Length: 152
Ligand SMILES: [Zn+2]
Image (cartoon, rainbow, N blue to C red):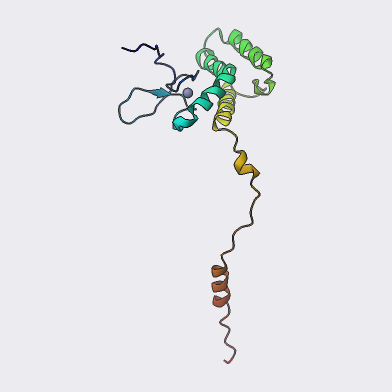
């Protein structure tokens, strides 16, 4: 018996607020993960869940878009979403003029994706090193380009 209730439609990573959309397995387990947890190391699951909960208004907005975009309630729901985004100080995530709802949805999705992947300070802080010149290679280039016959 399961003594903890798990919503089977939700992502299997602990604490994740997202719907499970991707089956992780080819081996027949019935666990489903969201697009942010799928394919990630279990060691980063808690961090990803934390980020998703912190940005749960985006998660919720995306679910609403999915569910209501083609329904008659859409106009009301759309206003709710815009309000939520403003309340959370994310006016940058509002639907922009000329943007399709699919484009908007994709933008919200990539925002979450970006946060879940984490910024990679270690990489961006490294000074760009000069391309490594292989001395052997340049030597052989010199040798190869030097066979000018002097005593022809
Ligand atoms: Zn998840």
